[in-house]
Image 1: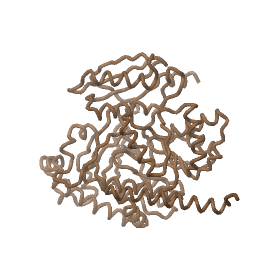
Image 2: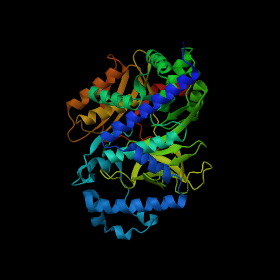
Image 3: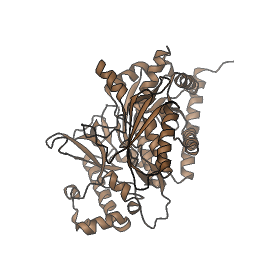
Image 4: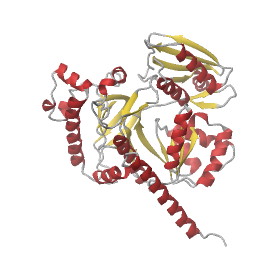
Length: 468
């Protein structure tokens, strides 16, 4: 006797409930009370804009006092600058604090860490989209809050913890770290397609895996998801059969053509998450299509620089993390360009609104076999080299031909042959063993005319665009 549709629905609900319980239990055992923080965030999002502003101010004042007492970098900064916490009485006073750059974080890592803490600090690296990854420390409670902010956004769209999901992002190069990530995916009820190694074979295999696993959403880089959709379309496979409720893009600027292609192929809505390694989810798109800032976990300012025009409505984002007491970042220049809005969203949430004007955009390289390889592969390579102690101040990959990769390197004081070998081996592993590599040591690597730094550039793609 066959299983009825009603029984199938009940079984799916039970599976999701079991997955949610498994996830919550595994996180609690590790000291990450995600559900507790999620409940709190779902209360505070109902606050009025004024009440949220007051909450942010209380947390900012508390953070500054904490920084002075516990973080050597800020104690020294305040003392030498004549700044006291008492003198910072409002948001305008807060603007008098110096901007924190990524180079300052790299050069003052030890002094930015909390002293005399009983909580263990866990380290990871940013993606390296500026040509050199930044090492960031967090404790388990901070990580739990950031995950809760992500789940809150998903729940706005009917996607709860435990819902089966398909991830299209990269995997760490290190096998131990890769296995750890796949274990995390298991406890989160997720399957993964490595976004830096998508080809016809892997895309087709993952499509059929999705048909069996039945994910309710896809989450990942817009470039990777768009490439996945384009390959499936070229193979004559139907994205509608996956019956996805939503597709969530993150990690890069979502371009209009990507959004339209993805929505057309899968016949579902694409929603945008703006996040960073340093602060987790910074903003999430609501059902009304507005991007809401996670005001309980970050405070966002815009710095209207000369490059952007001082009279413009947008500026470079300065972000202060309100929940990371292991390694606080105050007025941190993240490198993205935003606009902030006082508009009130019709969804009813009091969380402030923003728009991303310039963000991380990564193109594709071409392998020796003609396959398109996501440029994030080189970001993961840089992160892996830094984890193993490689010292380079900045790095840029430039693919000039299908068989030629030029690598510009600004050497750090402890640069050695290990870094050169790791760069060459990593590129050949990604693009093919016959790839020619030209290492060029330089004093500095200038940004693009836009002012943004791109760690990977494909001159092949740029020539193709010019021909069109």
